[in-house]
Image 1 (cartoon, rainbow, N blue to C red):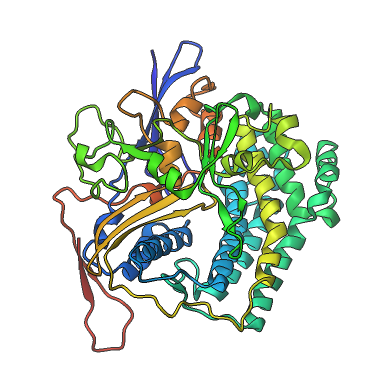
Image 2: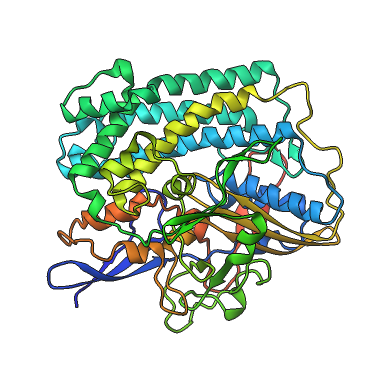
Length: 514
């Protein structure tokens, strides 16, 4: 059976490869998803106060730069609440955090749809006739990249900078935006919203795109997003990338007064939704390291397992990613999971185009991302309106001085994220992170069960060795981000680096020992 190695697979930062076993007809029969750099962000947090963790883990990734800081803050807060020394962040902080993440959804979905997956359906790459999608040159591509800059500016107004904001901290928010700042952010979001176009125009835009017409007055961005979906449907994306149809979401966008979430928490399996509590979610998760370059001690329940211990010479291992499972099953995460669990299929697009609203395939992942961008866009301004600048954004009882365990559950644009923190006498004793990309692109488990990606590419066609487009479309439909999944290793385990920061003349640079 021929073997094909593709490395790297993504247009975002790399470190992911895939090994395919294909039959004589070029159809994939088996796959191994490989993450090829060591992940060790958790180790850096040990021995530090819990309020340091968000700053450190927030640097895990420059793409998902907001979600790790927020999720780490939630883990610290949960640990403090379980210790009985903290009552929780004020409602204003909850609203502002969710509004900021909603704005981030708009940024990330634009980058994904236009820069990371859109080129696969452009005229330049796939001869589709959609020249506006051509990378670096197409009018639609360039317009989307300009709009995402505006979204980033909005995030910077709340976070102090973007990427890697500084205002999201345990206890709430270190910033206190006034009416003028909130109005400025709303104006930036409104500009992006105008470019995108009204949600109710989707049927008309679909008809225009199918007829080869372009009417920017009803949404330039919407026209180009629909073009991606139409091109994907015409390319047969509904027939590739078929996953097991099991989904998991932590839920997000919480109303502080009721606890209700806009996107619900739970799993979908066996054709039905199971809404679960946080405790049920946490109890069901374990990580498997049978095919990962980690010791057995690095596996198990993330609430108990130690920080990752590398074992680079481990026999049969092929990935630096672990294999998370929920009650022993692989689970797909991301926009499609959120919308299936929340029973949302605007305009019945997945039902009509993707073979069913809950079907797991490459086309439905793209449709769900487009649907979610519109759903969140339609809510962000309301979340911003709910913020009361006269009320506190930071709790007055936050402290690092406690002993307790906490779990932060969050739902970044790419899917479920969880941070696990144990604190002993004001210092972090144990830390674990499970990222969305690990759920979707991890390796096999001890029973030989494949990850979502490893299962999804089976049956895909390798058209040519030079351009295995169907497989690449499936991989990119999951929006992988390997920075969140794996990190730096050194051959001898140590690294000494001289750095020269911009400082007043006469001060010496620092040194970083890892």
